[in-house]
Length: 458
Ligand code: HEM
Image 1 (cartoon, rainbow, N blue to C red):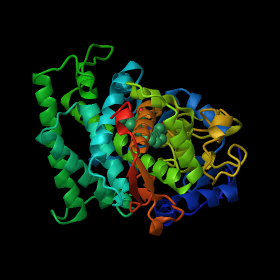
Image 2 (tube, rainbow, N blue to C red; image 1 turned 30 degrees about the vertical axis):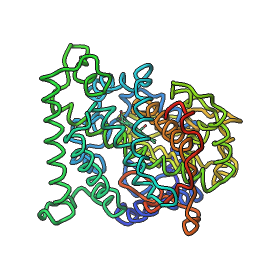
Image 3 (cartoon, rainbow, N blue to C red; image 1 turned 30 degrees about the horizontal axis):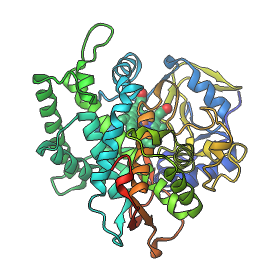
């Protein structure tokens, strides 16, 4: 097959644009070269894919067809997650960890977290004052961190919970600037020049977090909580096909992975949803109407099936997906998919953002229009904010439920508005490997919604 179209610009020259203006970078290439293009002069090449037929073939191919890189962006995350993280494991070990980690995030287990999410959202809202603007990223990060610490660790309200909350938010805030993404893309920059240097600071905070996580694992091994629904309890009691449990090191790395992957992402998606609901009054009005139409029920999950709320969350993750591409897949043996031949060693990035902006699938793709999800069903190769195939996100159902319950709880308790000076169209900015709304987005609580005592969650 002839070489794919694309630009030969070397990585070090395209990296600044890819890091600082990724969406422009993707769109320019798509316009110039089409839905499957290669970047750089490497052989085998790095390839971006935005063609649903090719994505279907890749998601449906055998897991053994692919591996992940041993170096580069993957190793840039090792300092944060450890080398036994699901995100960084491959082959048989990846399959083993996935089997052990998936059950807590599916089926009836999920229901157990519904009440928790609503209660923690209410706790986080307790400090909001009428007419006093609050920072949306900070508030959503606070909620999602509380949720993940309680749901994953099952931590009580003690010192360890407060300390971990504080340290994790400091660490992730530091890593959330566009500049710090360079540490991930260029792991060679990860040098400890003392406690005041940016990297030195991360290293020290991370050491303190590790000590707290190991202390919690030790306590829980000594005092098992067999009836507890939290993920750590389930992971401690899980056994693989050989009857082997996860070791302390494996537990630590997977906890760190769930904390980071499960909280950073949702903390970026929720501010977008709130922004759209207040930037576009028609969206906010329809959401309020739908929420008002639900009769008080003791089951918070009744919100999770509301069609318009669901469509708002889907459209939020379509227009600016938190992860603009899936994780990297390197082709292990030559692969032919939908007429394309990918040589062994080809580095594939399935481009979520570009597929979500194809005119043929999403007319007027830059317009936020939740109705498109009520009018049409999209295939998992046309809409895939959580990736797909053997590396798909294990927290997708949890994340969608969390988004819906947090939004429903907030909108049922408060009327919010964008401050006059903040009414402007927003574009995503980079946070590590993900994209997020600008960190200075604010909302003002106007008034409490009437009759809070009638709410099912109050
Ligand atoms: C809006 C929220 C979220 C988004 C947009 C998101 C997106 C993604 C994406 C795109 C991937 C890569 C999939 C691929 O390469 O095909 C992924 C992987 C992953 N996600 Fe999520 N995620 C979210 C929430 C969560 C939550 C709540 C958790 C856990 C509590 C989680 C845990 C993971 C893990 C462990 C992986 C690695 C899976 C593997 O490599 O086998 N994510 N996520």
